[in-house]
Length: 186
Image (cartoon, rainbow, N blue to C red; front, side, top):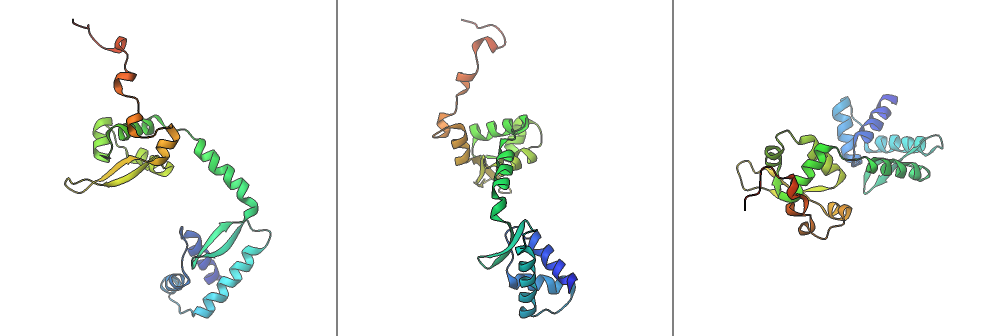
């Protein structure tokens, strides 16, 4: 019985979006090769809810939209909020900034096109930018293989105070004449 409870706990924990009792029951039966009734499962879930309701637990077992999931208790929301703020403060790497600039100026653009411009693999940078919400998937290209197209997001616009991509600085605004190579011929 304890083994089943631990498996239920592990399955719910591993389900990022939560799991329905129906799916939980099916997974348990397949994983442990046992038969478990709906009533037995409901009793075990009740026991887990009691366990997590105690004051010595930081989590609680909630049933939201018929999905079981672990949530932090409201008393810890300030600490979790600080964690989120701390994560958001982390600066982007030079590679991520370069990738973001290429996407901003060339959007919509495929990962392969970004990699051709940068000359290196951009998987990590693109994933990090997606995670931070600075870029988004803008569809699929009509080329062979239908690669994913990336574009900047609304959060990118808010973060940099832009109304549209037309507000991005133009190359002529950035490059100074004294930075050019060679002599200017008149």
